[in-house]
Length: 255
Image 1 (cartoon, rainbow, N blue to C red):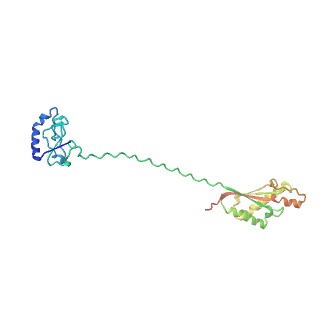
Image 2 (image 1 turned 90 degrees about the horizontal axis):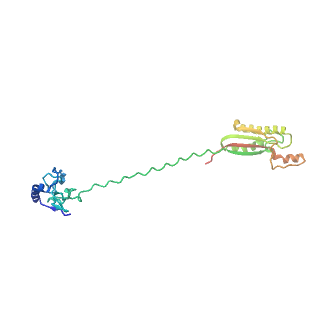
């Protein structure tokens, strides 16, 4: 698009000419007051001082086959600068407002990690310790021998020191088949009680200890004795004469 540039003197004469003939070219327009241009745009173009519904700027009589003030080829003054450009005359020179930034949808919040379930408390372990009555008692006796006490210290007390939370100590006495059930029941109970009393003397809580006598009712299945000689039979049945100690509690966690 080619714009016309006119000097200041010619601009005045052109403005007067346009003023006189403006009404002849505005047939069909509703008279009105031209809006005031911005300060920096007030004198960059030749002005039309007749009230018209246009922006008050003199435009070409014919442009794009359109007659009269409807054309948009504006007349610039001799001191026109790009800073004086208007949107009606020089839309390409008027800075366009920045395009709105697209709305940024924030990413959805990261899902919170599932809470770590607490570790279940370790199940109490059970240790079963079998002590031969030969080490604990003389034959047909229930009084603990010195070597029997040493065996309890070594086999039971040492293991109890590794238990963090003691729940139960079960002491069960057994005998061989020699003798009546009634006699062997009493003997097995007394031997279990003797072990319990020694454990209490070593600091094991008495309320954590239970004793039980089984007499001759639970012989070991792998002990087969058919000797006719009593001394030989007693020696063969020795494994059945035993005391079993079961310790139930949580073992100490070693790090």
